Amino acid sequence: MPKDDKASEPLGFSSGGSNPYGSEQKSDDTLGSREHSARTQTQSDAPEQQRKDDSDGSGEGLRASSGDAFREKLKKMAEGGVTLGETQPGGEKKAPRKRMSEEERRARVKRKVSKALRRKEAEEKRRKGWGYGFVILTLFTFFGLVTVATYFVVLNTNTSLPNILVNASIFALLFFIIILFFRYFVLIIFSFLHHATTRHIDEITPEYKPLKASLLVPAFNEGIVIENSIKSLLELTYPNYEIIVINDGSKDDTLKIARKWEGWHDNVQVRVLDQPNMGKANALNHGASVATGEVVICIDGDSRLSHNTLGAGMRHFADPKIGAVAGNVKVVNRSNMVTRLQTLEYIQGLNLVRRAQAFIHAVNIIPGPIGLFRRKALIDVGGWDDDTFAEDCDLTLKMLNSGYKIDYEPDAISMTEAPEDLIPLLKQRYRWTRGILQSMRKHASGLVNTKAGWRVMLTMWQMVLEGIVWPLMNIGATMMFVIVAVLYGMSPLLVLWWVQLTVLDTIASLHAIAMERESLALVPIAIIYRIAFIQIVDVTKMVASIEELLGVRMGWGKLERKGRI
Image (cartoon, rainbow, N blue to C red; front, side):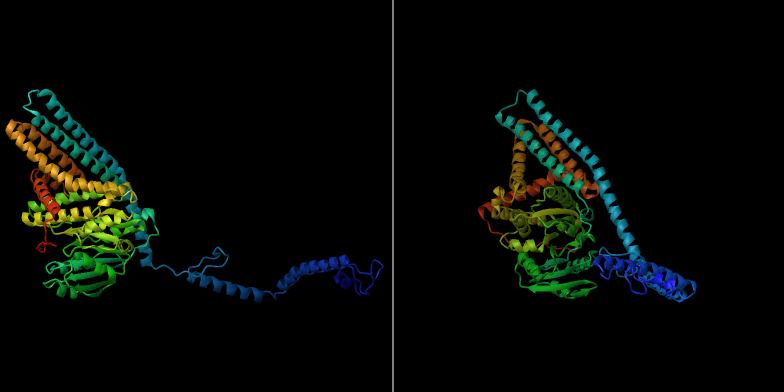
């Protein structure tokens, strides 16, 4: 055999087949080494053969076909928006992604910019808020100390006071001022802390997705305002909601007007339910029973929501412990002094208190014109009851005592029509007072309900103070001070006392108006608010409290609307 042929044979074998070690016996080790050598030789020959193929031009076709296939693959990947070498965690290539359109890209950029601006705005609000809060609290504390010092000076310098009644009156004046100062001090601190620490939901949970909302509109003889109310609800910017109008046995054309709007309007469905006159509580239960949203929102038939009300209020439900959210009610018809005084009352007397309570998640009254409720929480507590004249307060206390948290959202705004004359106003406040007292009596166990926690007990006792003690104390103290001033010639001291009360109310009004971003033109109204409005409303509350204690029967009453919405 030629030498080349021998060289090409596996190591250890000759052409004649003889054993180079002189033995016909082949060991397993020798065979294993030969097989390994053969594999090594074959692998070393493969590149050489490939080089030979390339050198004689036979590899050109292979390269050309491979290049075309590779370029075709790159083209398909580029069309699908896939980057070369991009793989999933498991090692497999990602599926082709759909290329984002120019409109989608702009919308995405707009969302990112909007989110960044909201974060910057919230941070700026917190930064400026602390400085503002320091100024208000310093001013309030200084005035309070000066007020207390005034009475001590009077007691120490006037040694010829006529009798013990006058001395008692002076101490009562001082005590009343201290109580009012402490009340406002706590409300200002807590409301400011709520304002300064409130954060946008996208700062807390960026992955939060909007829940579906069901808007319930109970209506009884609301023919004048129901159409405008439905129109305004269709203009909301929230992406996922429905509208349910419940006609509660109206005797006017409320049902006929509402039926005209029944059906789909873009992506919002309007449904109209009809029932015999059974009261607002039963109408709301009827609407909630057919609602499909995770959150049920109750509004009055004469209310109009701001475009961002749902977006602002719904974000609180990212916290599963939140059972309800109270909205911000504002007076729309500020046409005379009666409605302007109510405007200030809503801002200072109601919303300021709700802000303070929201800091501990224990708002005790969700207003009828705008209240947001988690549907599961409604089912847990049994919905609305019809055994009080304040079904919203009753439901709120039920939720608090069941362990749910209740927040306040200042940007969930509902514009409502306030009474324009004094008599309708007093009738409304009479009904409110009796309804709140009925709810408090019904849930009196909450005053010592340790299972619900200290925040529930605190807000319940605050209701007792605001609803019963404070009106009686205000009226009784004023009457006693006037009598003593007239009989014993202490009118200057009484005037001083009134001035001090008015200054305290004015500072509190300034704080509340700033929180609500309302007009500063409302601040001077605080003078009339203290001298006349509070006294008249507190007399009404006192009469309502006495009649509720005596069990005097009353009717629901109906506030006549003038279509100001």
